[in-house]
Length: 116
Length: 114
Image (cartoon, rainbow over all chains, first blue to last red; front, side):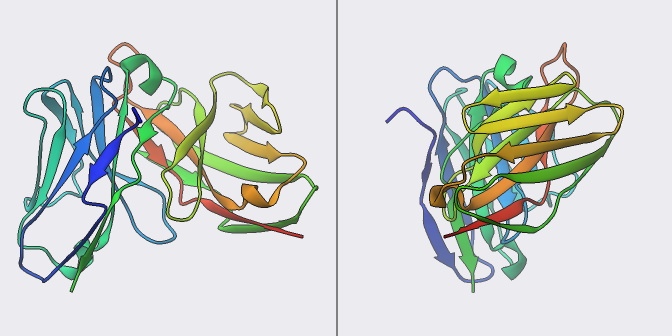
């Protein structure tokens, strides 16, 4: 399977703990995106990378969130001091630049976070 | 910024045709995309309209009217497996730089009934 893969698929944590999600994009894709989705809503943009450079971060994203893509391949999203409001599905997507120009992103199945 | 509006829920009968509308308000519009997402699944790209008119891909068609800031997704010969959420979405940014991100509507949950 050469699609976007995310790990873990489910994470339950207690408030105040740190969590980290990993995303492995489609190998030739230079763009990588993180989105968050809550029940009944569309995916909400968090941040994106082109190769290893983080080019944009949502203004809605608190300082507790950080993302990296150290070698331009896989990416990690870390949430520090989790809060109950962080409970959501965290979606990773990848694309080539030309595909992104048509709004075509390839999504993984997400990492579901539950904060107790 | 971008604002996208679509109905929250639609119910249709198997074998019928359904239209899911999307209106948008954007600062800089390049085109309208559609995605499908089954419960528990990943959003999957369906189509993109950059120009006015109808684009057909099998049972699914997508329409865009730039002058009306409006588009729709048309699903024909509905099947039970079409029950899913459908999102309209717009790429944002500059074409020369490659659009920076895609902004999604809240989604329309389609229920297909026998």
